[in-house]
Amino acid sequence: MELSPDLLKRLVAVQEHEITGHHTYKRIAGMMPVGQNRRVIEQMATAELGHYQTWKRYTRRDIAPNRLRVWLFALVARVLGFTFAIKLLEQGEERAQLSYAEIARSLSEAAAIRAEEEEHEEQLLGMLDEERLRYVGSVVLGLNDALVELTGALAGLTLAFQNTQLIALSGLITGISASVSMGASEYLSTRSEQTEKNPLRAAVYTGLTYILTVAFLILPYLLLDNYLVCLAIALATAVAIIAVFNYYVAVAWGESFRRRFLEMAGVSLGVAAFSFVIGYLIRRWLGVDI
Image 1 (spheres, rainbow, N blue to C red):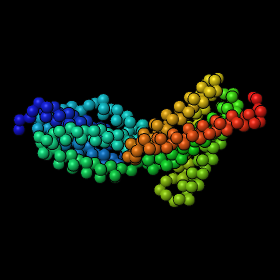
Image 2: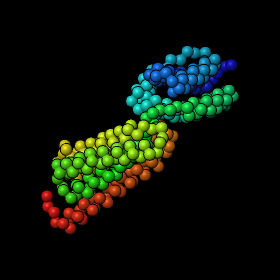
Image 3: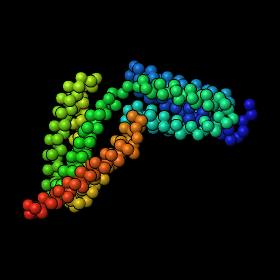
Image 4: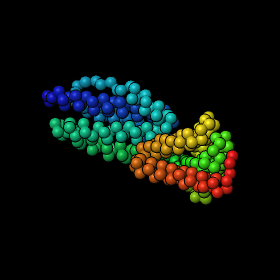
């Protein structure tokens, strides 16, 4: 079959996409211990290689993978987990739909291949079971409470004390005490639920997430003297943490980033604004001057 230059160009691009996916899945699988997750990802790598071979019959070319892309996704898998890396890679597959649609106008086989690929990949993705995602609920608990409670506390303390050292001291005491309390509560809650989660591990995820969030929010007050600038940086840090975490959850769980982000950011900033006003009013009412 004689291919037009435009069709050949599209097929070569799709072929490169498939061989890059093959090497990416193979690299990620090689980083994992023997088990179900590794077998699933190896199946995905084999499927991508099969698609590559299909397009090679038309292009009659050997295409090299994008080595940088393979390396980047392997790094993401190592740092943020294989489920997140694969779901992120699959988003690229969705963006390739337009190329398949254009190719299908000339090659009817393209539509069938794409439908088969989507069905197969959906089944395989449903088989993945990553430990860290089972504990996302514990991380959400620690993150939510730390952001809501501490942004509110810092806003109130900022107007009440107007002294960065006192604010940092009070915030650290509050944050550390709350992180231990939250960890203990998550331990008891997980133990009573009798789920597959390990209660101690769930408690560690919750407490550690809480204390790390506290550290990021308190840091400006330890480095700077202007309490209003410190509060602005702390609130901006809170929004950044919310954005990064919710993007991770949105990709890994396939949920809406916009809805989760707006809800969580709205609650945290709303509580901070309310506490800011309360701190000012209490300071005026008590006539405290520190």
